[in-house]
Length: 284
Image (cartoon, rainbow, N blue to C red; front, side, top):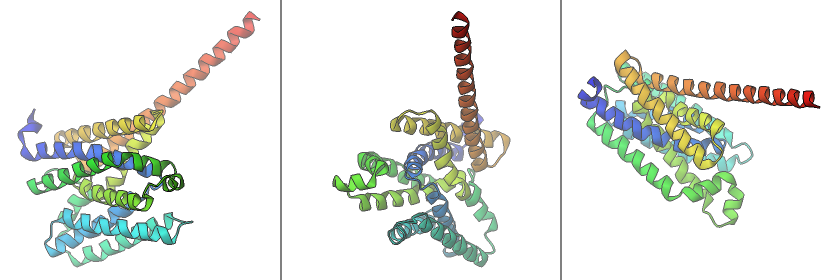
């Protein structure tokens, strides 16, 4: 196939696979902990990091990762101060990140084209350094989640019970938030900063409609995410579309199909139940 004749497309596909697996794994824990907006807050901080990197000449992915990790630490610190209203910490960082990004972008008037590739993703501009950085961080994140899977699962179910059982809840939570920050920063090269949170949440939303267990939801969300990423990359290449937007639109389409299919199945089940009731009443 023509798509495999280009080195940048091979890199994009491999990066897409890593990101497509990592994002829903992180996203499932985020959704179940009712922290869906944290990815949005960290993506805005990442945007400020990209702008800072372009201004200073640093690698944008590295600077975005640094800013995102700092934002993750601040979110956790603010959550300690607002225990009753923990969502406030996310709102504060989101606002701060957006304001900082706006100021830095106004200082660098000459890189409007460059910033668009980070906002919406750009397969063409993925180089060897991006490939090594994104795949390295993504695989490391997956390894750490596998290593601390039981602790994360316990904390997700009940933080108080986990703390009583001797789990280092504060340390694990901080580490997980940092991992979320890193994954958010690296995923922008595939789907763009503005759409990273969608790739974390949409496949999970679809999987939760079908799965009957945590592991089932994890596997299903990974499958839905991978399908969206790969179809989106192929479609964007052959139809000359934005990769990030195409990936997310396919993810939304899969979610809508799942919801429609589930509704149709429920309607069919009700029809069968009604028919059985009519048959019983006639026999009586």
